[in-house]
Length: 271
Image (tube, rainbow, N blue to C red; front, side, top):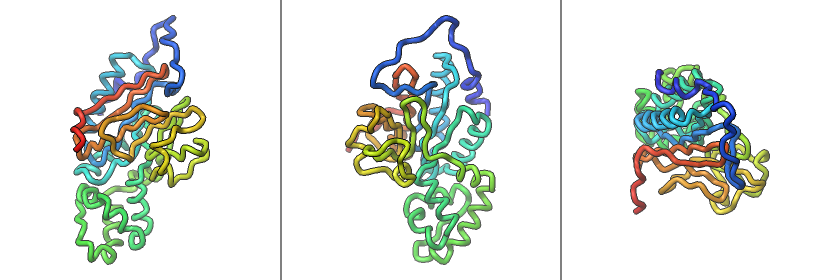
C-alpha cells in the first residue's frame, strides 16, 4: 500500500502564485481530478495507471487531488476479485480523495446476489464467469444456471466477504465538482444533471453521445468503449476497452480547464 502515499499529502501551492486563469467553456472542477476508465478485472493495468497518476501529481505538486473510478471494476478480465479489493483498500485509506462510482456490471452482480434465481441470466451472460473464477467459483453450463443460482450466490457471498459487499452497495452513482459531473454511463442530455434517473446513469441514454449536455455541464464517463479517449462537446470519454485493447485511460482534469489523457498503451487501430 505504499503506492499513492505521495498523492494525498495535501501539498500547498507556491505562496503568492494564483496559477493560470480559468478557461471558458472548459471542464473546471474545484480541485484536480484523475478519472479512470472501466477496469473490467485488469489489475495490471490498474497498477500501471496508478503509477502514472502518482508521477503527474508529484511532478506538478497538485493539492488535494481526487482519484475517481467510473465503475465496471469486474467481469471480462481475469482479476476482478483483486481489483475490487485494491479499490476498497484505496478508498478506505484515502476516503477524502478516492471515489469509486457504481457501474452497471457491479449492479448486475448485486442484483444477482439479491435475487439469484430471477436475476442471474443477465449477469452470467455478461462476464460473470471471469468474476466468479477470480473468487474460486466455477460457472456451470447454461442449462443448469437456474438450479445452481442460489448455491453460486451463497458461495460468492462467502468468498467476497461482508465488508466488500457493503462497500459496493454504498457506492455513489455520480459525483460533481464545479461544472464537472462524473458518472458511469452518461446522462439524458435533455434533462438537468440533478434530475437524472439511476438507470440512465448506469446504462446510458441513446442521445448522450450525439447531444451536448445542457447548462454548461461537462460529463466524464465510461461504459461505452471508444477507439480513442474523447474530450469534446461537453463529454470526457475514458473507456478505451482496456481489458481487450490493453489501453486503460485516465483523464487528468485541472481547475484551469486543462484536460490531458494518461494511458497504459497506445490504442490499437480500429478495425
